[in-house]
Length: 184
Image 1: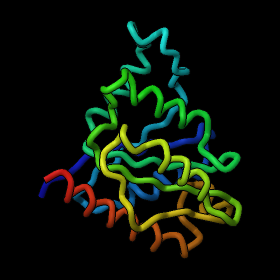
Image 2: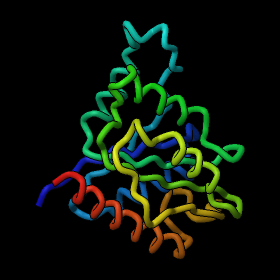
Image 3: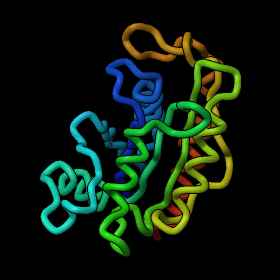
Image 4: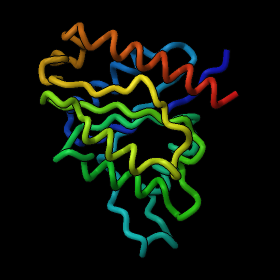
């Protein structure tokens, strides 16, 4: 069986962010056909097109990490009905230079969350608007907007809200099938 590497880009900088915990949970639940590599954005500097001729080392490292993966999952919190600034910055860094997006052609997944009742729907919609044309095919179903995640994990990052586990399992299994379909 082929194992596909997946860059799981965490759209939050907080050490114990819900997005990081969700990414870690997905990695634990992933079938053997996927190897999830969690990518945090703490060291990624701001995109500035003036630097593109001689890109900073952190941009090069991020781009190479994405390019070296077979697929990408964005795990995003919702900030003001959109994505966090750090996630948008990562998308800008990874999608440049023009026409050479590191995400291009890679099967893509979107997982959003919020401690509130809407579950990151605004962030998902923002990503679905931003990503076409710079990524590969985006998994259309199941869509996943995790709401009320504030009490979903214990202090060690383990799922304690059991209603979330089957949702994450269904998603990562569907994503594995999506990757297999597009990476024949």
